[in-house]
Length: 229
Image (tube, rainbow, N blue to C red; front, side):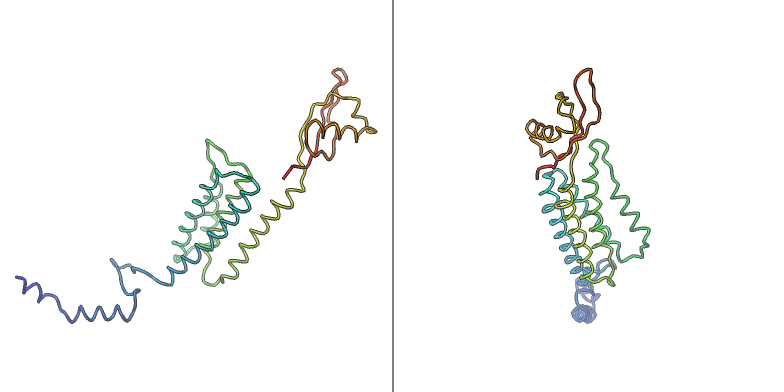
């Protein structure tokens, strides 16, 4: 019985198949009709995700965290970026239209959590996270790595400028019920600002009067101040 089993295997055909695999490389190995590995696509995946992860670290860990000091969104940002990237890269070899890419961006980009709504600023960073994943995941071979890096560098630099420079120049406004009504006179504006600085500890820049109540000798002020870094 053993001899019949051995005779059923053609040694020459087996050796021939091995030589074909050796000549064609690892791409010739298939499992249930699917290639075991495509070296070109594999290393493309490694390089693109590594680049994607690098820009994510710069965006979230360096820019976002240093300016907002919030760690609770790290899990969402990094995991969402990884999921979107892997979905896009896995489907990149199929025929996708621009509408699919925009639809995917919308689905992952406008997610709302019912129990804990995401603030506008954090939602904007979520759009950036999804955008970076789509750029690296769906860009075809016609787009060079130089172009990919340039696009993401533009996003990173623009985000850094808005966070570090432009936003710091913006003034915040608070409403204050003020009882020293004698200081709201235009001639005593400097005294009013100095009094607000001393009592609130804020870097008050300007003050405007929103409402005056002479019956209670009080006024409602709109105080513009420069946030501390």
